[in-house]
Length: 262
Ligand code: 48F
Image (tube, rainbow, N blue to C red; front, top):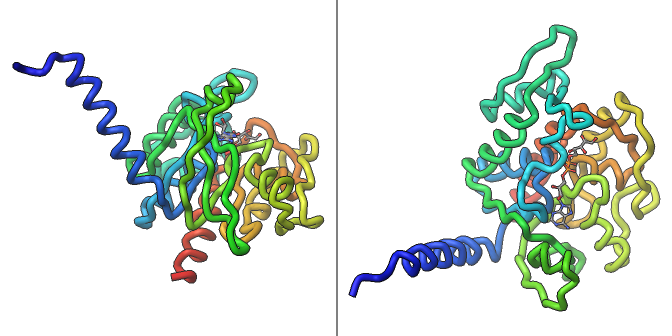
């Protein structure tokens, strides 16, 4: 007897999902957070041939991109960061004064599609609740469904091993917090801990986001606002060039370190 449609559809989803999940249980790079910096990093890492998985706790990847400034869905980037967007085939409007504007929905969807098309796998509605530390190195991510966390269900997670982990969780730097608070690790910051984000100063925040993007500990990197929070940088609000350049720099650092480790 022919299989009924309901069984065919359910079977297709379950088989495809578990094949995808199994392929990503051991990755080169595990990225936590699908904001602009994490998505840019994912795209360049995947372009270089690495196996990359992004874990995003929300249903929709894109982080703080969608809402532009104060829900006005336009984004501003500096002219020197616009080529990163153009690399994703995202269109910008050159204001001729060193800045470009663009539609925030085109930016979010373009970054997501670009990372995915390059080969990175995005697991949405999955949160990273802990890290694996072994022999002086961060070597994995402890993942669970975000609704499990939100509903405070007592359900154990599973583990994805990774040669490198990128904290792209934005303002809270959740992964570096696990390293510092739980594992007692001293990271590469002025105090060895998390300095905490300073208030708004767009120019300085944008400049330091890229400088603050670094390897914090063997196997652990931070990008975007997570990097600024760790190093005590200023916040910058609705200007996104630093986020894009930070993601690209994080990818370059990880690529160099993983190549040297071979
Ligand atoms: O905050 P977010 O967009 O990260 P970003 O790349 O960019 C910051 C800008 O959006 C914006 C800015 C500063 O003024 O320009 O704020 O630094 O995205 C972070 C993503 O990480 C997810 C979160 O849902 C968001 O989509 N996230 C946070 N914690 C976890 C997580 C976690 N534990 N597991 C999985 N995803």
